[in-house]
Amino acid sequence: MECPSCNFQNTPGMKTCLRCCTRLDFSDVQVEPPRASGVAAVRAVRRAQDVVDIGVRNVASRMTLPRMGSGSSPFRGATSAELWASLIPGGGQLVRGERRLGRGLLLAWLAFIVLAAASLGTDLQWLFNLGIMGTHSLAINLLLRRELANMGLRQRAAWGIVIYVSIVVCVYVPAAWILTGLFQVRQIDGFTPTRQMQPGDVLLISGRWLTPERWKRGDLVYFRHSGFNFGHAWGSAGYAVDRILAGPGESVMFVDGVPQVKGVDLPGEMWPLRPMRPGFNTALHAGTDEVIVLPSLARMVTGGNGEMGTIMSTIGRVDTGHVYGKVLYRLRPLSRFGSIE
Image 1 (cartoon, helix red, strand yellow):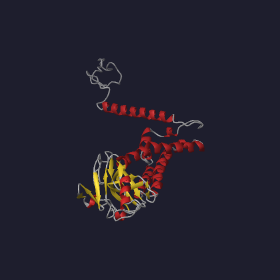
Image 2 (image 1 turned 135 degrees about the horizontal axis):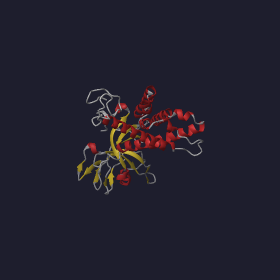
Image 3 (image 1 turned 120 degrees about the vertical axis):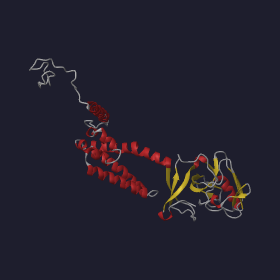
Image 4 (image 1 turned 120 degrees about the horizontal axis):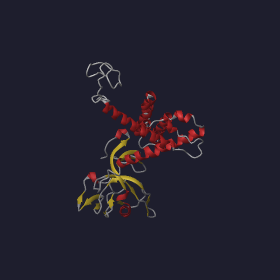
């Protein structure tokens, strides 16, 4: 420390100058440099991270299963940052610095997602869905491999099951619930083929959050119709796709197979996907919670047009709760991808 009187450089900690015995003044001495406030902020953030890390570890350490020997938790082997990053497979490895392993797991997970999307509506979709969840479970097990290696075979198997079920319940079930609220994918089978629709077509349908408050004429919808059995005329209940002919509280009349509203023919884009037979005459009225939509493609055994009118009066009035969404696009086959006319 420099003396203000004789400029002698004293040893730090001296109260008086060794040369002139002048009392040294400490009032102007800065204990912390100007950047100390920033350093203190960084230290505060790090302390907060440590608190979170310790809290997560303490919670994870209590995640024990009955009769699992020592009752130790494999989650002790990962930091909170690694565990949070593991919401995306490979993220925990990337945070830990295992870049090659993390990137490999992430790419495998993304590949299964692409394959699942490409196989929507087919039996292979479930196989690729299992691959998505299995890769995620594998990533977390590899993140905890050091702790799991110290456990017995039964403990490792039990924790593997716990990790897999936890991922499915906490990540993929909520994700599926959100996605189906936006869109649904349905494969349509068991009906008479037409120019617009073929058995096996995979359709993209609006989810519950995108469903309109009120259905209108001409909407192409996915719905469930009831069955009927009138002796020699019968048809089974099932799911179908067709156009709405009348909304809640509205009416439609068929005259010689042509749908009319107040004596005016409906435009062709509002007709059922398969036109009714010539000579088909009937009037249909929807209740306040019903729509008129005829399952024109459904396979059924019927007699004449008079009998058909009775049948359609029974199954053509569909509760709005059984209309599950509006058909947006045809996804498969790819050669016919696009909207349905």
